[in-house]
Length: 562
Image (cartoon, rainbow, N blue to C red; front, side, top):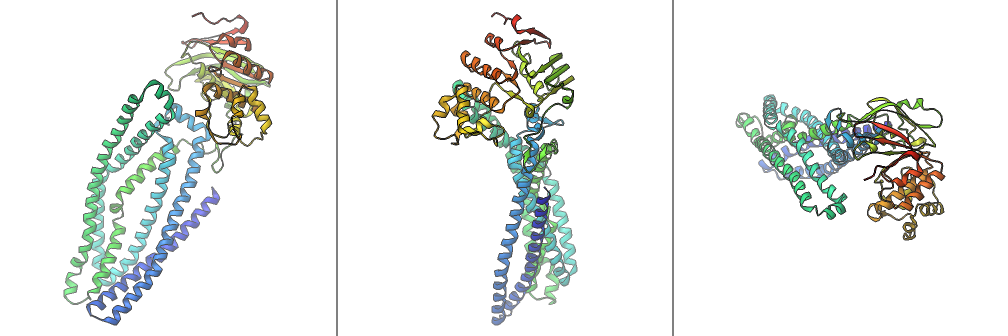
């Protein structure tokens, strides 16, 4: 990020330079308007003509300066968004932080809702509003300092009145609108909840259609919508009060010069053109002191966005990888005790007790087992006893509450294959190479691999292996499971954790893919319920719902009869 910091400082310096130019031109234009007004009052045709030409020329310079100032401010905000998004997205994916949020929903005891919205939308709003408000504040301060000199040269008391007026209005608005910060924070969450209800329908359209669940989805979506609508009415009510007070005080600034200059004007101490100059100067100085008043709604939104980003950013592991390039693919997720692994041992478990993340229920108690590269273990047991959770512990996704668990990790050849494999929109090549899409894979090898897992029809119907396809819609669950096995074979996995990974396959295909794993020399742990799996395993680990376990030889084990 060092190079980005240097570019950011360059942006800031350029913006400050343009700001000073704009401020100087703004002060100069007040003098031109003063002279123009006096010329009109005196009916001085030549002076009026000269004043109009001066203002026209000044505007020809002023407009490009405003454009340059506005453009660099916007470009800086966009550049900041890029850098901040890289940091947050890298932190979100680094150290499996995304999995922690998905499985627990909290970070250090703070609930984290809709991390996608926080990264995609809140950062955009935060950087845009922060940049805009900061430079507007600086602009106001610079303008106030410049125009304060103008006011002092006319009457020093005017500046004192402006300060008192601005402090009073700021305090009043802050008192009335303090509730707006909390309401905006709640509104961001409620809007995100409603958007997620729509995303859920899109991602599960087929299941909802099979269940005829439209009414249920409508009811749940309407509940979240009405929650957002009700809170938005509260936001509108409070913000309307703030806005009405702000507008009232802002309009008063047009009247103020007449009140402040009343006595000295009628005494003949100043010309009428001073009214124009004081009105412009008064507005500029008041804008600086009334910054909170004029921008309270934006400040409230900024604080809400900042709070949401702070909550999710607090849990990032900033050492998980280079934030410019994302998490390292070569990073190992092995447990810290991986040094305990003997040569050839892929997973070591010693007196480990596994509980669900909330800690309310024990799934497996005092388990001790060593799994070598040639081990082939079948995990069985009743539904809900913790079979999948045990694989999560083996792979390092979950930590044991006691004991020692060490795993080689993904980069050392341990691969987890879930029951519902992850497929995404993209090319066929990207599907097979995931997650290491940079590996070299020629077309002949790709098609041979697909043929070996009975996916010949997939590549035969494609015009090109690089064509963009919406694979989650194109492939059945069984075909997706075969894609997962093709990935395992392509990665030359040494040990595979299979979570009912053949549940959607027919028996012959199931036997074929297990034979492929054996021929490749890979060890594996399988979760399954079919007796057809026994011939491909050497031992069976049976779990019960009380945290107990029993280890059998596969030849001696028989599935319970229904």
